[in-house]
Length: 80
Image: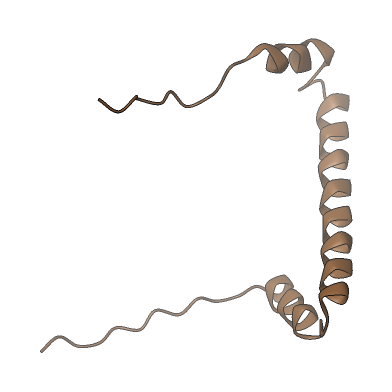
């Protein structure tokens, strides 16, 4: 007989806080509002990081143009 193993995941303070906020969403509308707030927060974070990379010279207009020309799709094999 094999012994049962237990695996625990440790959540960060931020993860626990978000779980608590989600627990307070009693309606679809309140959940929607919370999702909008989280989306706004992370979009501002992304813009701030992009601005930092731009100011540091890591990205530029020509680099963005280059990204627009790249084709990074996964090649699919057709069924035979």
